[in-house]
Image (cartoon, rainbow over all chains, first blue to last red; front, side, top):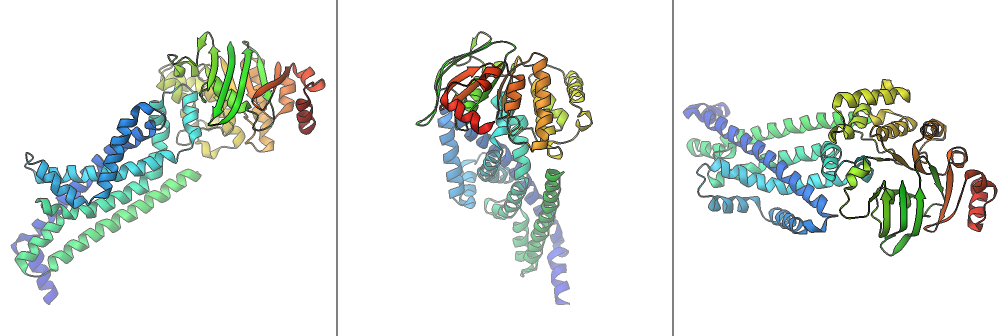
Length: 226
Length: 240
């Protein structure tokens, strides 16, 4: 009965389940919001890089994008987060800082995913769009991007899963996330049962999303055969 | 209608077009033939600036397309293009494929565009495919829809870049049939093709290109019966 006693202590006594629920909420908010920011940044960068290919005047933007992706992908997200929380002292809400930090980080990875998606679309699609008189931007918006995004949805899903787990370091910048909740429970119960529960919650979320993704992928594949 | 002056095009060091001069009048059906690598597709693609010419000028309806100030998108609305690989948009229905450009370019309302697209589809006997997606269609159906997609813009000239080369043999006929109808209605057409039968039957003028130049041109009768250039004789002996 030791196990049940430990679980009781980790969840019910001292209302520890509330810690877990609020932590879970913050973890989900961070992961979702950061993914959205990441997608916005990623689309912008990928499109700039695409247009910079045949418009030399955009080289400066192209350079900036390159520096951004290189630096972000070349340094640990935790270091980026700590630097950011130092730079954004005026923002009191640490959750917002974490969202911005993870969003900027994820943007660099999403940009690469989207860029590969855009380049996977046959050149003939662009040519057909342009031959009808559509501008470059219209062709991108109505013809290339919709197809590219469909192709990269699985990769974007994986990025979201990775991000969900990465948010576990948010505790370092004083965000009360799921991992932090596990730590707090460990401190007030003097054993690791709370952390096991937290690990289990992460696992269930990731397994659930993986399942969703594979259903999604199968459905998309069916759409291609039609 | 279209005049090409001293057109040259290079890809890197490789010179593909070596100075082409050509006048194409309204209502003409010009068929361009020649061995592969002769530059005929590149020539066609230069006409609507799908390829940017290295030097020379292209005039269309009194506008110099090679002038930097020219709004090429505006001009392309009047120059339909049909591709070897159809290039239908696979994520859109057949109907949306046809109406996308006219609606987004604000030439028609969605309703108008839908109506006119349905008329075009009825004409080619594919009205029942309006809500289908391109991957569900045969090659011949795709190419005919690609042709009406261009027609929906009411172009003044149609450019065909080997429209039947990617088709299974039994589907070539239906596409050529539609092109013949267009020709009979007076559409100005420039066609790059290997279909000599089509050239003989429909063309008002046949051009032979080799090595980046127009080596010979004539009415289809004389082009096939009295070729003069030795390379054309050689070419015809191989394809006929």
